[in-house]
Image (tube, rainbow, N blue to C red; front, side):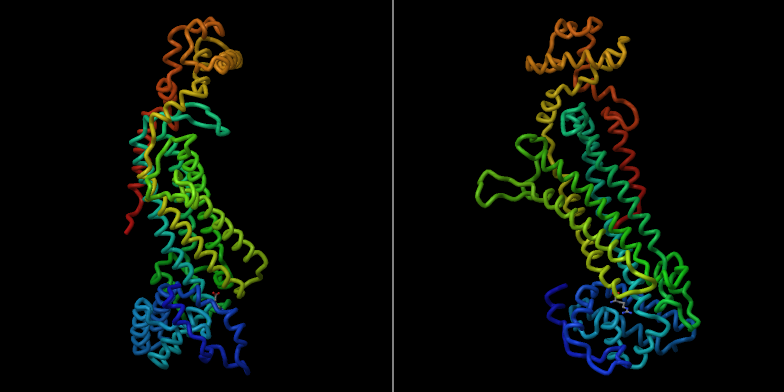
Length: 476
Ligand code: ARG
């Protein structure tokens, strides 16, 4: 919340919209304890949009007069403008965003404002608002995700033939290309995009009209409000509509996976920018220094992204735990869905933005990567495959190459640095065509099938990935 909005929070006890059956004022602490306006005021746009749709439907169903509808429309437009100007006094006494806006509307337009809540409850109202809000934010997150993926795919296309060591157990395994590694990251994010799209499709159902829990006695048109709000259809069951927060949990699960993926990428960047690996350089603008050690350039952005994944995982667990004991239908517990959800949205958006800005700027140190791939016997599997092609059973070939590697460890030589006689001492079937197999280029080029690391395959895979990104909807 902005400082201005915080300052505007007033604690004066305005009459509660539900005050009729109460005979004493709310305890001052309870008032603050039960209020959500401090954090749910960020739903104001969606709240107003929902109210406009509801009011239009009430008018078209003959429940409101045209004059009421016009006054409500004008009043809500004024309130929207006032909030966006920072000229709206949010009141804790009015509990939440919904009652703050409704009270201000009634102050401004009188009786018509008091009619807006006909056939509706804050229970279906808040469920509608949060769905609308999350739908917009999923669209924003998908755009940042796409921007990041574009950066990865572009870099991968450029680096399709750049050789580096591939690792398993963080030990040198086989040579790969840097482009192939980047496209592995892209695949993780491609699945994340799919999960967000699934979540969006499932949440896009209108709870409006469920009212408190059982529906309403007025002749409402739920199809109309659903379509005015861009929902695919009205929800099927009023009890479920006001109590369901699956969509928030699903989103947090998708967000937790996104930040988990970014955390894994971060871990690799942190390793690669170390003096010991020295595979890539991050521009200074994504790093900070140390207040005591003058030589330090720390990869703060990837480190912080790695750290932030923990908090998004926490929000997922918070929401699951929030829901697990709740009987139908709405319970006040649900007010606690907002802070974890909002923070998960903010965090995943910031992390994606940081990565989308940073990825196109990372500079691979090709010579260092190449030299690293030459060490660690990265082409040992290629030698074994070569022996198999000469008729040696794979297990025997594995044994022969193991002995050659042992000799290499003892003499400090890579396989490609041994003489033909040295190599033949482990297997007489080895000829001088072996050296083509032991080069890093020969090794990567040989893995020439879909999904393999051969530069030609990586180039084609980057083109396919770019085409998939082109096929997505446009971002603002
Ligand atoms: N501020 C509430 C929430 O976020 C709105 C719904 C309140 N409904 C109620 N019956 N108290 O969940």
